Image 1: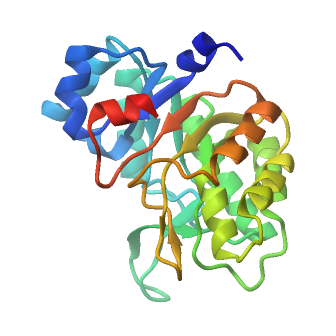
Image 2 (image 1 turned 120 degrees about the vertical axis):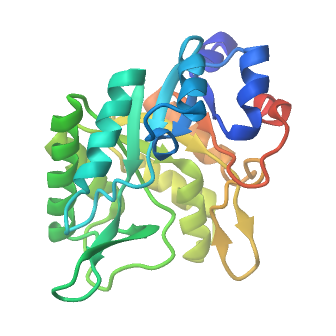
Length: 273
């Protein structure tokens, strides 16, 4: 793969500490990715900065709040705000996570939002909920979206569909694409006690249908010795790079993002990675 091809397909997460510097320097990047919810307000400085960035780069909108796996359904206000942002920015991609966060506080109580990415059950029922919500989003936005695999720290006792099979069924039913977070695969393998986390994650990659991956995420993780956390706070670990190489070999030059959300370093660190 030529260097030029790699550069065209690589982007970084654009976070507030780098707003000004990136606009002034305009480094060679394929795209910038931002968290959608940070730009839901009408007007304001944040949206003005995003519009400036859009003049020079393709923008990928990555959400953390749609809660696509919620049996309680989607938040209409959230979806409307996302649709408005999509119309204003015309992003190259729109994505969110295969998770739930909305549920009744009590059996007959109001719907609350957990403000977290809670794992969807890998069951037929969980799949049906995710399919219905993804279809609703795509109909509202009038475009396909990407759905990201989670780093999950608990699992449902009645899970009976493998995760790759689950995502293959989702993409086939809805036409959406997979946002393949390679770091999450390694984190899950490490927490599951895999003897070779890179090999286990690579086997997961091999189970995904060709032509369904629209973007890849890379990030760092924190290993406390007891639990590995996907914290996006360091360089990509050596265990992750072989899995990324496997993904690129299988899916081609898929647009790839370097994520860094905690302990955000100097811009040059992201660019070098």
